[in-house]
Length: 123
View 1 (cartoon, rainbow, N blue to C red):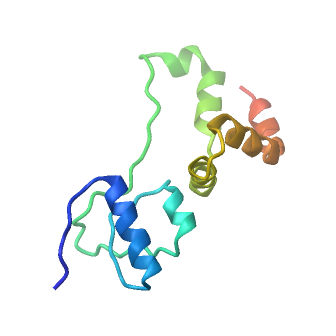
View 2 (cartoon, rainbow, N blue to C red; view 1 turned 30 degrees about the vertical axis):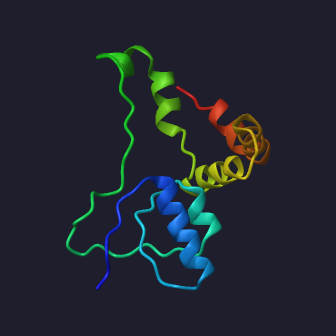
């Protein structure tokens, strides 16, 4: 019978690494974006009963009338999207010792065309 061990993220990471090193099965409560998704060959389990919360969503919040008062800003905010895999990759680079600014700079250099499109979003 599986047993649940409660602990910190560091403890969970250590348990995951230990199980992988021993080539044993393990289930952990991992999330995205996390560097562990790239470092280890992980599979997300299905949750047919909906026991766990759904994936998180992010919402832009502004004062009433913002969209009408600043339509261009609203369009830019609504159009900017960074894929989860890119965020995970940046997090992995930081975990591996790269400074956050350096990791983000690398992403912006590799996505110059996307950034140009964002800069030209019209009203």
